[in-house]
Image (cartoon, rainbow, N blue to C red):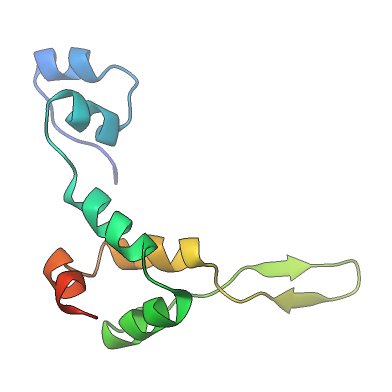
Length: 97
């Protein structure tokens, strides 16, 4: 139910098995998150860390488990971008240096 969308019969047939992003692109509607992600990808990891702190977003790396031990790896740039894409407005990225 988390990712369900109410569609009319016509739109349901148009979407088929495509993802929501692909369906919206077919309709000529661009997802605003795409532009935010593109802007975030141009930033460096230290800049992304500052944005995460500013917006109180906690980004954790993955845990790599070995046979006898495990260790916490630092977050990747992709993890920062994905977490911040839904939180940071595009206007905020345009105003930052």
